[in-house]
Image 1: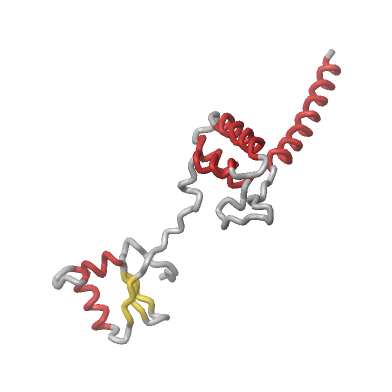
Image 2 (image 1 turned 180 degrees about the vertical axis):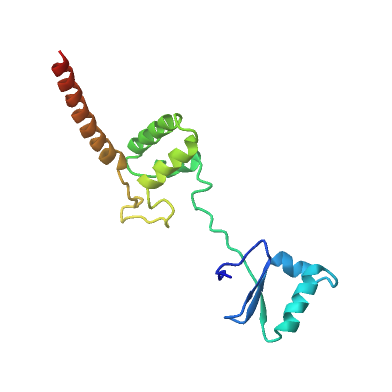
Length: 166
């Protein structure tokens, strides 16, 4: 049998001989606290077979994305606090318009926003003049310049093909 490194939530308990522990889920613990339940019988059987093993309750920490609850309004409020905010608000509005062509517009705007403003989820800092310190990464310029180069080479190739055909 292969080794299981992670706790199997479907099984609700895991015997780890290497660490001399029995890991149980919170629901398994609740069920095992009532005498006569299958969980109680399983835990008693394990403790009878391995009396030196410690029983630990597994805790789960969901690693939620900090941007999960990032709404358009929160993005707008952040942009309004930036110096030269009108420029960023115009970019935001363009991103909103373009995102409407995608299946999940809010997700696309959220991606653009987090790529463009990577310090958004970090603590707020101000300079000596009281201006918000932020970092803006202009990803659109790099990608568009590559696309423009590709399009210009494709256009010249197409023009050459048309000239050859004529």
